[in-house]
Length: 545
Image (cartoon, rainbow, N blue to C red; front, side, top):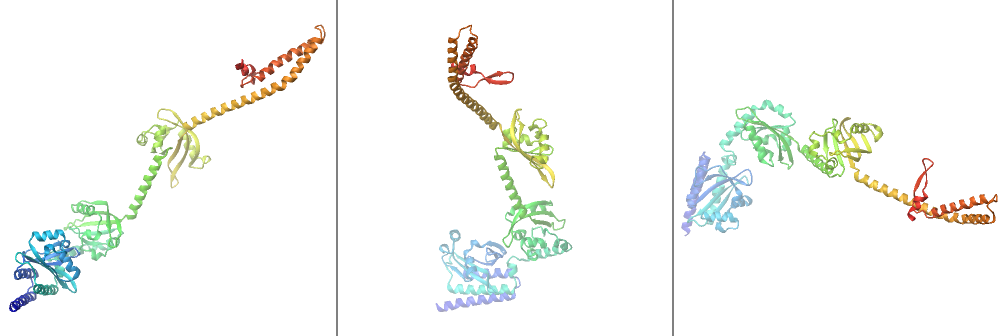
C-alpha cells in the first residue's frame, strides 16, 4: 500500500514537472492551458477540468480553457450560478464538495443541475496572482469517479499555483480578462481613430455641453472635459468603454434608441435620458446624436444637464394643475381675454353663469364683448385703465350685467384687472358673482321691511287715535251738554238761539268724528288739496261697519 502511494506521488511529480516545462517553453498560451486541463482530466479520470479567470466585475467569469473542448475560450459566465467559485474568491482557499448533490453550499437549482449531469464531486482551486485570487481551476468528477482524495487535492493545489505563476510570467492576465488579441486590435484601431479627431479636441475642450465621439459599437472614442465633469468620470478612463458603462442610464432603451437612430444615419435631438454618475448623482441629460460621415460610421453625441430645468418644469406643471383645479372649483365665474377680446380662460363657474361651454368659449367663436350688453365691455375696460376705480389696471367691486346665452340679463358683482408683462398689457381677467339669488332675497327683505313699516304706522295711528278719542270725548261732551242747556233756556226767536244751535250741531259732528277716530284699525290716506295726503277716516274704519 505504501509503495502504491509512493508510485502515485512520483506520477504526480512527473506530471507537475512536465507541466512546468511546458509553461516555460510554450508561447501558445491558449493551447497550453487547454493541454493542462486535458491532461488533468485524463490523469484523474474526471468528467471535466476547466480554467476560469475572473472578469472585471465580481459577478463575471471567463472560461479560458476546458478539457473537453479545445475551441472553447473567452466564454463569459455568470458567477452567481457557480457558488463554489464565489466561495474560493471569498476565502482564497480550495473548496471540495465530495457529495455535490447534497452540499449546503449549492442552492436547490444548482443541486438539481448537478444531479441531472451525474456529477458526484466538485473541486475548485484558487489561482493566486500577486496575493489575489485571479482565477479558479474547476474540476468535476462523474461516472466511476466519486471523490477527490487529499493527495489529489494537494497535487491540484500545486498545479493551480504553477499555472498562476505561468500566467503572470506570460503577461496574459489582461488578455484573459477580456483583452483578447481581437479586442486589442479593436482598441488599437479605436485609438487610431481617436487620433484623427485631435484637430477637434481644442474645440470640444471649450464647449460647455458634453460631447462624446462614439465608434460603431457605441464605445467612447473621445469625451470632452465638460462631459467628463458632468458624468463624474475621467476622460482617459472613459475612452474605449461602452456608453452604458460611462452614463449608467436608468432606462437603457431610450439611450440605445438614440444611438441606433444615429447609426442609421439619422439625426436625433432633445431626448431626455436619466443617468446615474459614478458618485451617485442622478441627472437628467438632454441628448442629441448625429452620424459622423466617417468610414467607421462613428456617432457624435452631445448632452447638457437639464436636471434643474426639468425639476422646475415639473414644479411649474404641478402649480399650473393646482391653479387650474382651484379656478375650476370656484363658484364665481372667472373669465380672461386677450386685448382683442378672445377668451383664453373660462372656468366652470363661467359656464354656469353664461350658458356657454369652455370649449365653445375658448374655440375662438365667442368674444368677450358678446358677454356684456352693448358698449359695456369698452366702458369696463376704460374703468380698469382709469386710476379712479381702484388704481390703474384694477377695478374695484362694481355692479354690472352679463348677457346669458338665452339673452337674459344677469346682474353680477365684478372685479377685474389687467395683467402686464414688462409694462405691456397682455390680457384682462374678471371675477363675476351671480347676484340673481341675492337680489331676489333683497327684494323679499325689502317687501318685508315695507310691510313692517306699514304695520308699525298702523299701530301708531291706532294708538294715537284711541288716545285722541279718549282725550277729546270728555270736553266735547261738556260742550254738547252746555249747548243743549242753553238751547232749552232760549227760544227760537232769541238772537242767541241760532249760534247756540250751530255750536250744538257742530259739537255733534265733532263727536261723530271722534267716534270714527276711536275705531281706526288701519292706515288709509286720501288726497287733500292737491298732492297733500290726509288720513281717510271712512276707509280706516270701514271694515268695522
